[in-house]
Amino acid sequence: MKNIAITGGTHGNELTGVFLVKKWLLNPKLIERSNFNTTVIHTNKEAIKECRRYIDRDLNRAFSSTLLSSKNSKHYEDRLAKEINKKLGTKGSSNPKMDFIVDLHTTTANMGLSIVVSNQSDITWRVIDYLVHKEPNLKIYRWKGDEEDAFVDSIAPHGFAIEVGAVPQGVLRADLFLETEQLVYHILDFFEKFNNQEVKEKYNKNLTIYDHASLVDYPRDEKNELIAMVHPNRQDRDFELIKKGDPLFLTLEGETINYQEDEPMHGLFINEAAYYEKGFALCLARKVII
Amino acid sequence: MKNIAITGGTHGNELTGVFLVKKWLLNPKLIERSNFNTTVIHTNKEAIKECRRYIDRDLNRAFSSTLLSSKNSKHYEDRLAKEINKKLGTKGSSNPKMDFIVDLHTTTANMGLSIVVSNQSDITWRVIDYLVHKEPNLKIYRWKGDEEDAFVDSIAPHGFAIEVGAVPQGVLRADLFLETEQLVYHILDFFEKFNNQEVKEKYNKNLTIYDHASLVDYPRDEKNELIAMVHPNRQDRDFELIKKGDPLFLTLEGETINYQEDEPMHGLFINEAAYYEKGFALCLARKVII
Image (cartoon, rainbow over all chains, first blue to last red; front, side, top):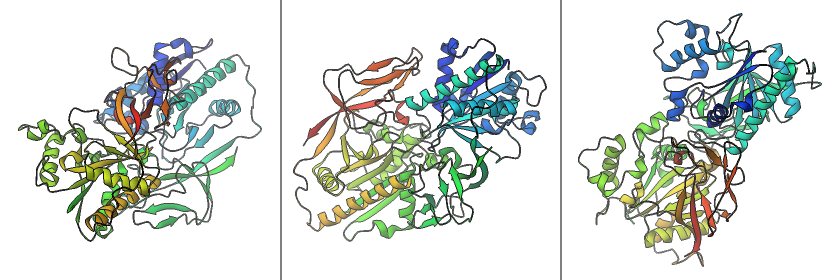
């Protein structure tokens, strides 16, 4: 592992990543290690300036092969994705500029300190195994909700996104800033040891992860407007089990809508602000041991 | 009291007010009372559509005499303020269309259920006295931070804003939705009883309020960018006392900045997302009995 990138501000209103990158640009020694290079960048500078998630569309869905190879990209983020791919990729290349990308995110859902993995590889799982050993509260979500992985970290052979919450968009919370910072230092420490062949094959006997199953949208009217909200008994209970008959939504009129499926599932990203427009109120996942 | 207005969506990303108004437009019986008219409106429809605080500038600072009398308003919200003033005001008129305006807001700060009063009057204090009696956790903040009161409710002779939090921008939280809804019903019930001369002169022996003293900005660099965040020991502790030497901020480098003043103060609106651009990290207030 010769080149590691840490990216922040992929969503311009997720301030933990924005300010961690700022800190490391001012103090690069903090992310230097003895046997690889660390690159740190703000990915969506225009969105950061405006403190918005994006200018035209979500940058973290813009790294698909189709969008990256398109000749006429009218959206700002599509053009930006191509630039970032040149700088840190290129995607699918046998000689990529970066070996590993960590992309820093926050969520308004009560996800605690968590990792979203879609770019699976042996190296990625080994660093996760180490991180869970260092931070036993760390939760792992394996995302399989898209046809192709179009996240920032997909342009390197290995990587993942860090998601921390709950924190509002446009707010910097010191506690989550410090937790995310520490997690990144663990990642860098792992790779330094890895390059020195000082890491174990396995740090945990088993690794428990949350495996993506499906998405649940808010109840909506014919104009696609919300007519219900996440039920107060479900709010903030990310990673907890939802069983048939458990309250899921409360309509504006006060009627409870229950979870109807026979198979119990764990709820994740419950009531995340950015997903109202994407059309989901929560993700359902199976807790599995790998 | 013949005409009461409830306004929501003054900030388009504060969804509690947006969806309560939606609920009441669909079910107007809920806000009808026997002896006055209730008007309910979405104030900033364009901002609601885009789920943004505002389009050009903050609508809730646009009701100053100067802006309302300006002939050439280039900002969308300045034109909108004039329309709303015609519909619900006019400001300062001896024959206003509305007697009382309740404007519904949310905050990312941990303000609980609170009221911001700037449009002081005997009627306004009497309804607040009743509300504190009904909801003992309700907090009252008397705001005096602007030269002239330019809030939505300032165009009626009486009124105030409801602020509830913590809730992220762009998120609808059922618990705070239900609490705000109940508080509005108490307001309407009060006026119905008031018109029937069924209310007491005084519901509480004393009324404890938080009286605005000053604003504290984040530490910033020469480019006006934040170089520190609210200290983890201060975050979420709205309405608590801050004494000399208490930690206030944590710089990106990890240095603690303490509160330096001799007079202890109560912190309010701590780390509210919308106030980063206004230039304050928290409000300081004195707890007083009136």
